[in-house]
Image 1 (tube, rainbow, N blue to C red):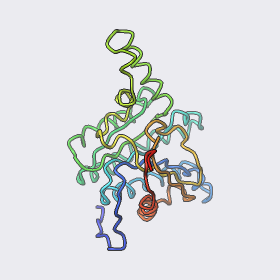
Image 2 (tube, rainbow, N blue to C red):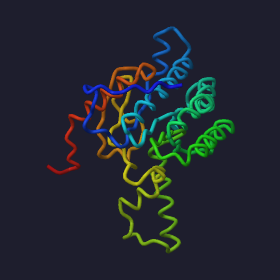
Image 3 (cartoon, rainbow, N blue to C red):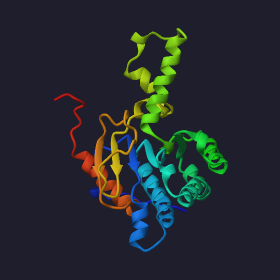
Amino acid sequence: MFKFRKKSHQEVLDKIPNHIGIIMDGNGRWAKKRLQPRVMGHKAGMDALQKVTIEASQLGVKVLTVYAFSTENWSRPQDEVKFIMNLPVEFFNKYVPELDKNNVRILTIGDNSRLPKETLEALEKAVEQTKHNSGLVLNFALNYGGRAEIVSAVQAIAKEVEAGKLSSEAIDEDLIAKHLMTDKLPYLYRDPDLIIRTSGELRLSNFLPWQSAYSEFYFTDVFWPDFDQKGLRQAISDYNKRHRRFGGV
């Protein structure tokens, strides 16, 4: 069972991001540093995700979108890809019952067509089991690519125009957003307020390029398996110091 602790006054944060996106990077390097196979880093990363999800839920975050596997990750060694594809099965079997008890809802974005049967079944089971929950949305970006998402949205809109269901003049930002995968998220929380990337890399790597237009970014040298509750609070504390102007003054 997870032990929920009370926050001290020193930990109270004024502004909690409604939607946090996390690029969970550094699993392989974490393992290599410990002279372990890369897959052990992915396994440790799964445990880190459990801790961060519970902390985010306690803090009042509404949506946590985690970059679990990109469309480019298929180029990795097949043994590693196979291991990663089994992680959702292990994660959901191990942690979803407890997440469900704590009102966490599971959603996914990405192209499910290439996912192994067992992985897809685990995802669908977790989504179904938690669909009535009203707390934090844990949104897995699995086999997700931001550019592919935008291309798919444009193609869908083009078909509507060709069919005479839509005029080109009616195409605006909101219409495009409605054709993106994040449209399944609560309307007010579709775009991340804060994006965190671990491991010291300073790039988005095709993660939510449309949705992150006005996101705040937080980069840390900590490898993902070592990122924990304290790391999340530090990121949110840094976010509290930002002044979001959205192009204004």
